[in-house]
Length: 422
Ligand code: GRG
Image 1 (cartoon, protein in one colour):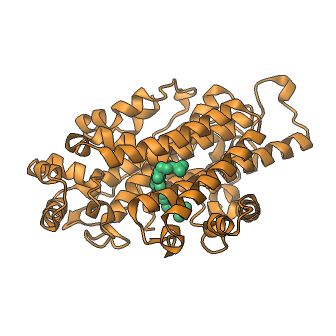
Image 2: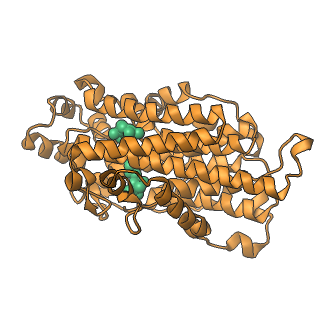
């Protein structure tokens, strides 16, 4: 099974707990198990955590797991190091233009609110559209049905436009959720500028989020694919469910790794996993390939959020306390603290008290510094990054250079997610 392989380095009890709910979601047979090689992002033998200073390196097996179709390429192509973002740069800039035109509103106030985070320079990392455009190319393989083996040029252009539309919808849902999140959190900044709630007030920010969602719905309807509509509607439900889980958790739920992972899937990984699946469905891919696309997105999304949770404590420096500490200050308990509780059970009572008291936050940070919480969170993120890369390795073979290049870029992204500092 895809899940159990990547978790082999985690203690069994932790793996069982972390993966219980994940296994109950979307269990599926691996279509090409025999092709699998072990791919592991590993901590270097010299890896250590001293007062939470840490050094990580990528084990050489990183590239060795890429399947033989990639190894069979000409060495120049195989060695080519391409930035995943630059591979789709032209399309990303077209997408940015289209997004700006899609969010034009009749009422001037709503128009300026809706376009706020689509303006040049404040578009964010564009991580999701990059993944989706790369996934569209990575899945550009002949379909098993002979009638569809030769796709005419016009049809493949039309398919690409529809897949770009998924990237636009995904970005609109993402930005809508950011706007609502900032209202709920009373955030003051976003993407390095004043948050919309601060610039225009909570009411306009909520309405702008609703407006983006409605424009996303119109775009989704235009695709005339009910399965894809259903996937993305479920994503919105998951975003709201995840946020509500975070907001309403009991003290018992706050210290549960299972609860945390489920909330993380809903809040962060569902959007990218279901959008990846939508890309595959639009291409008419098989259930197996669609599920591999989903698995890639899910595991990449989980790895992304786990690293986000580490960075909240460490910032760019890898030293504890250098991050914004925004989560813990808002009483939000994330994986590093949950792992620290396993080592220091006395931290459980501190966390359950609610962390309203700054002295309790300091105490929790002291325990975290003495624990392997940060390191174990990174390890869990690496397990998910490995699983994401394995999903790409398991795609049907292709000799097409563009397809292989995009697959390598998707695998490269799993690496970047783990090593990112912002
Ligand atoms: C209105 C759809 C909708 C949802 C309402 C508020 C809410 C329910 C959900 C919150 C979802 C949320 C904001 C999750 C956090 C996801 C996350 C990791 C955001 C940061 O993503 P980046 O770093 O941001 O990719 P940029 O700015 O680079 O795009």
